[in-house]
Image 1 (cartoon, one colour):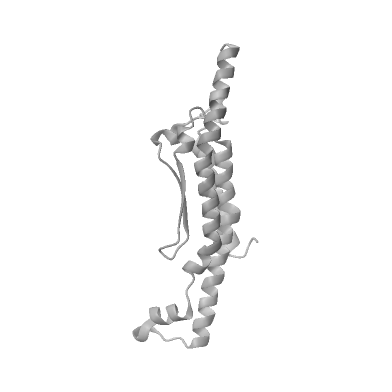
Image 2 (tube, rainbow, N blue to C red):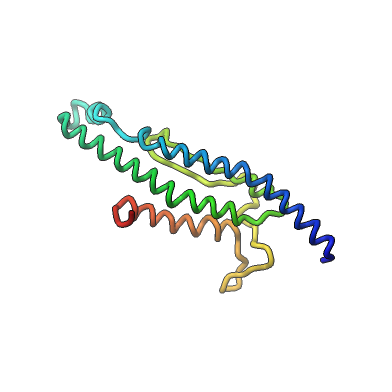
Amino acid sequence: MRTADYIERHHRRAAARAVSGQRITAQIEAVAAQLDQAAELVALTAGDISRRTGPGWAHFDGTLADALAAMTLDTAQRTAEALRKEWLPVVREAVDKWPVDTGRSLEGLTLSFDASTGALRSRLSSAARYTYLIRYPGGQRLANGANRMVWEESVKKPTRLVARRIIDRLAGRRS
């Protein structure tokens, strides 16, 4: 590759990275802000517990209903905190290390968060169908000779590890 071609390609990639990373970065910040309020949205109140148990199942007195409500709030707060401390850094790192040529695959990444169903859910997905087939530049290979795939190395593997850390954090095995 000629030096002029290399320089032009480098500038094109730099321009693509500067533009394409802005949307996903804003989504990461939005999810972080939503996590600050999420615990209160999914936690049950004593009234919720009384309504859900109803007259035909079991009846909790006010003290027990208050205690159960406090437990759900505590669990929701710990879950939101675990997502903030464990999941969001994985997403940020994946975005920061994403190889950019045209910027379309990075621009196609979407981070969503939902607490409307009573559960805290966050998902990183891609609108570009070829995202899962992107290889690291330079022909980098794994020890077994296979190509290093960006989605596998930057998202899938770290997500499996972070799920274990979140479970440990919620179980009190890690603070």
